[in-house]
Image (spheres, rainbow, N blue to C red):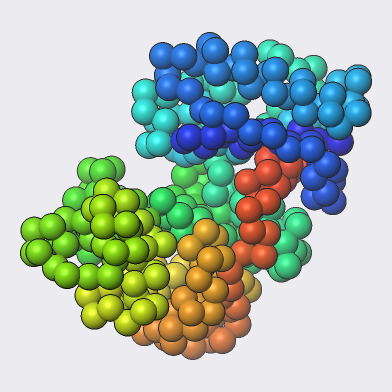
Length: 321
Ligand SMILES: [Zn+2]
């Protein structure tokens, strides 16, 4: 059996599963601010014990490895979280050392987008595809890139940080300090911020606001998509811009990596063909027809389980390395 730990900005999940990706136990807890990080680790270890107990594991030697899926940027070799944007203050947290100290079996770490790419490669509908790109399409935009059957880790573990490819030199400022990063246009958090600002400063009347219960602060990707589906002119216009930018980045990736398949998480799982079809129609503007014709673009098949499966896939990949 394998133990997976999926660390997020607000929640942390622990699961128990096998090498085929069958999850037998799963439980979650809140992620703590950096001031309470010792308490966080205590709670995490208690949850691991609980999950193993509930899964009938009485002897830790029954666990072959632990896989930690954590928000980037991180340093895999040194086992550090560097500065995860949704865990403020978690700077240089020695996550691998702290968790390894608690367990006798090997513990492996990778970033969540890489973990999801590995999970798709091992357990998803396109498992075994030699060239596969998973895109988070969530609050931010990260990728897990499988190239010629192997995860593209990169020299400093930043292979797949595609959200910060600059796609417009004169574009808006990204929190990372550069201008016109892809994530500025296609990351859920940045989109919601921009919509709020436009609606407020230009006094725009739009169903997006109704979908958010009349509150600017509640505007999110769901409200945006719902309003665009209803034909709200402002929302449709913004949605088309979003699709153009999404296609631009994916086109660059198809042109660069020649993947068999590009899988999109979160937003694409929810919106399905309504998002995928117009996205596909736009792709020929951004890449050659040969790699495009060879590439399937689809929502992730693993749904909400992908976070748990990412931890298991990281454990399994670590054991085989
Ligand atoms: Zn950036």
